[in-house]
Length: 131
Ligand SMILES: [Zn+2]
Ligand SMILES: [Zn+2]
Image (cartoon, rainbow, N blue to C red; front, side):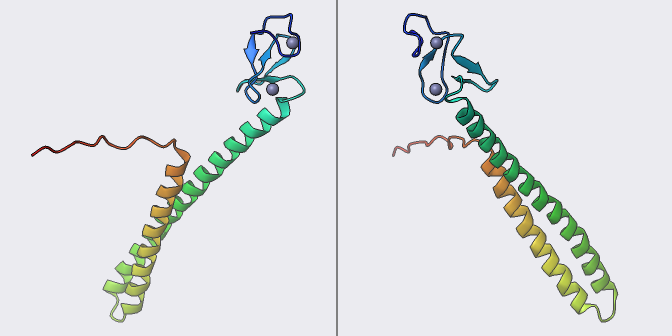
C-alpha cells in the first residue's frame, strides 16, 4: 500500500481513524496508534482520551461506592451493637439495619460499576444434553 497523500511513496502505517495508508512524513505517532498528521491526529487523541476518561470515571465511582459500603457497614454494626446492649435500643438497632442495607446496596452498585469497566467476556459454554 502506498501513502494516501503521496501515491508514489510506500506507506509505513495506517491511520487509526480513516484506515488510509501513511508515509513517514504524513503519519503522527500518538503512542496509542497512528493518525494522519494534522487531519485525524486530534480526533484520534480526543477519542482515546474520552474512552480513558469514561473508564476512569466508572472505576472511581465504583471505588467510592465500595468505600461507602465499608463505611456504612462499620457505622451500621456499631448501631446494632449499641442497640442490642442498650435497654431501649430498638431504634438504634433499626437504624443499624438500615445502614447495613445501604452498605449492601452500595456494594452492589460498586460491583456493577467495576464490571462495566472491564471488557465483556464470553459466557460459559453450553453443554447439549442428549437423552
Ligand atoms: Zn486519517
Ligand atoms: Zn505521505
